[in-house]
Each structure stands twice: as structure tokens, then as C-alpha cells.
Amino acid sequence: MGEIPGEQMTARRIGLKLNAGLIAASGLGACSSGPSQTQGSFGMVSGTLAREGGVAPGTARTPTPGVVDLSVRADHIVRIHVPASGTFRALIPAGRYDVTATTPRIQQVDPDGMPVTEPCPGVNPTVTVTIGKTTTINVTCFVP
Image (cartoon, rainbow, N blue to C red; front, side):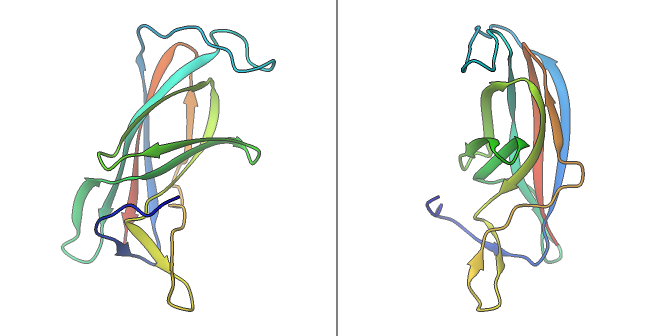
């Protein structure tokens, strides 16, 4: 993944806040992605990726670029690249996913002083995508 220009923040611990809600989707086409998926077994996931917090007084929730990974298991990951606007949308197979996120705007520092981008650890990092529906998630990476 290439570096995204802009301000970078260094943090020792990062948190993830996930708010999930379902809203009805309209106009989803039927799709298939191989023998394990049946036609029409997809749902839409859309939402935002943001960062919040930092040294006092801290920052309000600010959209941030990065990556949101949705995984059913280690060998089945849906990776969504999020632009600087912080918004994303993807048609994916229905199911329950574990959610992780990274952003180059929040980095840890390894013992040698080199920046390392680590996933934001989750408070309740799961989301359920329903066939023919849009699931909205708002992912917030907290900077202590």
C-alpha cells in the first residue's frame, strides 16, 4: 500500500469504535462470485472511516483515508480501500464479518523508531451484511 500524503499522527494505542445499522437498499442487481455463492446472495456495505482524539484538546471525528478489512476467516478477507473523504461502499457476499481498519494518518513507532501502521483494535468489531440490504458502518480509530 502506497503512502497517502497528509498529516500523520503517532500513537501508542488505538481504539476502534463500530456503529452498525441496517437500512433498506434499492436497486441491487443479482450477482454471483463462484460456486460457493448463489445468485443474489450479496448485500451492500457502506460507511465512513475516521480518526478521533489525540493530545488534549484532541480532535473531533475527522474523515481519514485507509483500509477497512472485513473477514469471515483468515483466508477470506474483503479489503476496501478508503479515499481521503473517508467514505466507502462495496457489494459483498452476505454474512457476518470481523472488522479491522488501518490508516496511515495514525502510526505506532517500533523500538528502532520506525513508523508502523497497526490495525485499530476493536471494541465490538463485527458487522452482519444481509442479502439485498445496505449495512452502514462508521469506523472510528481513536488516538489516545
